[in-house]
Length: 116
Image (cartoon, rainbow, N blue to C red):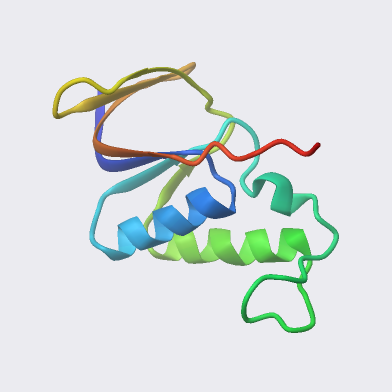
């Protein structure tokens, strides 16, 4: 069973940001994403309200930049690995996916939203 200090469920912009900050703080960090990273942002043609990009930025370009930064910071990202069960009792949290079982000291749920 793999042990992590921080597991983030969801690899959208919020999950990637949490991963970057967790890893930057020295935590062994894993992001579990059931599809491809980026969430709704990855399919947006242009993002016009993200700080630092006054002319806007393509959604996929923003996601690519965040992925590069997360990987450079040491975040491990598992794509196509959806969570099927959580056990949040006790000091060690258990995260079960279709592929593996993980233990973590802390969990962040950043499972995103659905377009309406």
